[in-house]
Every structure is written in C-alpha cells, then in structure tokens.
Image (cartoon, rainbow, N blue to C red; front, side, top):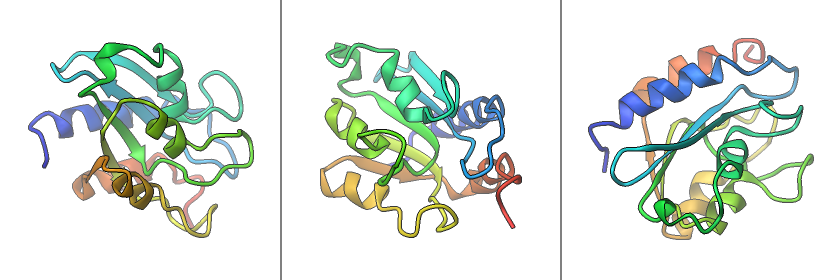
Length: 150
C-alpha cells in the first residue's frame, strides 16, 4: 500500500543520493528512515562515511538498534537494498531484517550491472517486510547513476 507521503520522502532520498561521491563500480543511493508518525529519524547516502558504506547501512548506523521508533518505521531507499556484498559481512537486506523495520519503499530494482541477481526485494518480502516500489520515480533515481549506466 502506498502512503501519501511516500513520493515526498523518496524525492528527498533522491536528493540525498546526489551527495554521493560518484564511484566506478558503485551506485549512488540515498536512504531515509521515517517513523510511523512521519518524523525523519535518520538518513544516509552511499560513501557518506567511507568508500564502502551503503546508504541504508549509513542511515541504520545512526540509530540504536533497539530504538523503539523503528517499530512501525519505513525505510526509503532509492535502490533495492543489496542482497550480495564483498565489502562488509552483512548486506543491507540483512541489516534491515535485523532491525524492527517492516516497511521498505524503493524507487528501482538493482539492475544486473554489478550484481548478477539481486534478490533484496524477494528476501524482504519472504520475511514479511512490506516492500513498495515507486516506478514513477525510477528514472529520477537512475539519473543520479548516469556514470554507471550504458
């Protein structure tokens, strides 16, 4: 189910993704965690704190894992959360599943450009996380990654 504010929050996440230092072989992604009552709890973007940090990971790291506001919160990410990763022991999908967040909104699914078969959406849904896709904003999120797209 799409909430009225999903587009607004995703547009803000896309704006955040523009802060990413472009990197060959890595997408520029923005992420925002919003509480059930519409308060922004944290945000992050790819390569915000180091060359390997992902947007979802950065946003989640800014909150205690047991923050009660995460129950009922939504994580907005401009790209499907990763399900495979070389640079860290946990993928973004695993980090989300370890949190109380049970709603994720994405603008587009990860293309097979860097990972042959990303299954972040499928893995989250299999664990009863609601995943909402906003295809109307996919082109805007993709445009930030023009350095990678053929």
